[in-house]
Image (cartoon, rainbow, N blue to C red; front, side, top):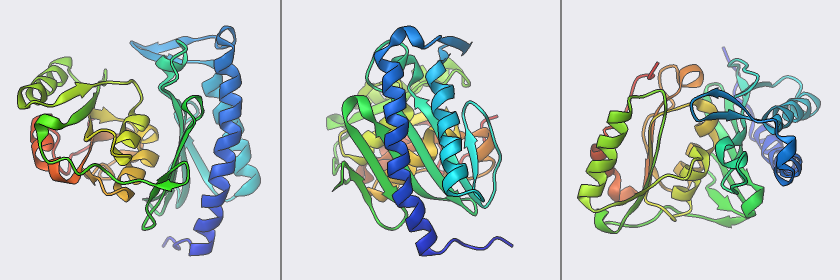
Length: 271
């Protein structure tokens, strides 16, 4: 039987997380400033990986080993497994942007205790923004509390819809078309973590994606929920290993965006 972490143990990790993310951001920013150093490669269609992805994840694993040696790490580039104390990192979310000099990228770090996300940080050094969330204690942007939007009219909404190569393109196009027909403005920025963070900050009214991996969403979805957004049951089934569809919306637009997106409230793993 797993033993829950004490409030003190979670607080130590929450405080350490910010410092670690800042150090990781400095490393990633050095690579970003020297595009010739990236050695960009492709893992699949529109699936980029750079030297920075590997370097940031390696440094993070060293940080955790030094600060919390009994904790485990799961990362996009080097894998890992679930334990009762698990850190989940996407070293560069929005790598396609990063590799082309676009500032819309971030470092995403979530902490999961006994299968439940407890802490999250989204650090976007190129735009000077850091989002933090802790279960039951709200969410902040650069130290100031944030809340999801109070938008009630879908015709005044901005919805971001992420695209996944793991799902049929037809389903994506049909969902986007439904949102446009309702009067929503639909966009895509190329970073799922930052897209969810924008919902938390009230800058957009929804983020949807027909499939997203755990390292892209674990931190940002907690932050969005703590900011008052409605979220789907992403943390169900084999979400850690296989991912799930994802939806986070302004509370008043939950039903209409949920229906238009085609994302069920409690979906099974997509693969």
